[in-house]
Length: 365
Image: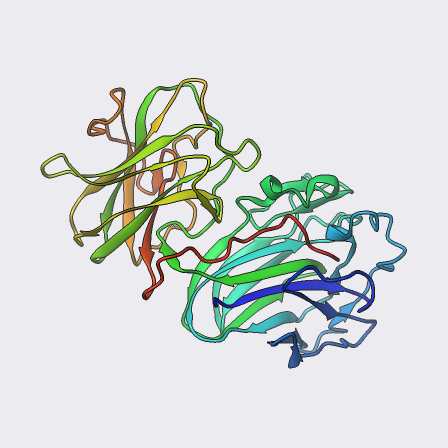
């Protein structure tokens, strides 16, 4: 079974019954109860204190929280770093590809300057904002820094894109606080696929064009693609079928394709389907496109592709065609930018089935 850790942060062990597969991590005034290493539910984790005024503390009471009616966001642990850097640590069973999702910040507090840094052992790999400049009381933020109101935080669509996928070289994951920061929930799940785009998609904003749209790319190494994926709008989801195609520039040949549907596997904000495995050659120019429809499912405009894996490929700009199913010959745009942000996947090891889906439908504070 793939490794899966679901950690609830809260003040008391008895606040709420854990959902299946979940465990809890506690904090208390001035000194953390669950200081690393804690062994619970087959996991090893805990708080690390670098010498700050105190490691973790509660802010109010879980049971007295005005948001206690929604246990998904009622609990949290505060990291007060002062001039130091305190962190939450989780030990992984081995190096490899894991997806990380968090709820950061407490819903009844409004901080505007905090973020957690995600470390692979001692190496910084991603900064996770806990708030936005326009943060308002009653909201929490997902990993992408988008606000989600506490009343909808438990909805799957609300956190569809709040995922970061990383190929860990070490067996230690750390979330390091940079200021007064709050954690309510962390989910870490081993992945069966290595994605080209490591962060769940931003909200889509276009459906005013009919044709095939996507981006141009060049593999940095030989890539054996086994699955293709189309990102879904974090709120609206996907209601249509979309053909995804990979093309080789030199001869305009279609080298891979699949059709994703609303019944396809939803993995980390992307609907994915297998395609006949194909090896894309390092240094060769390719394009990926998907069929889109006027008034249909929304897709991402020509924006920067966030946190794609540069060890797999480089993105050289957008592409499109008005004729569906044909080579997307129109290019241009800015390197690193593109339409739709389709994903390409390598299968890790011998796995032929998707990893368990990251699911924020239920968590308990």
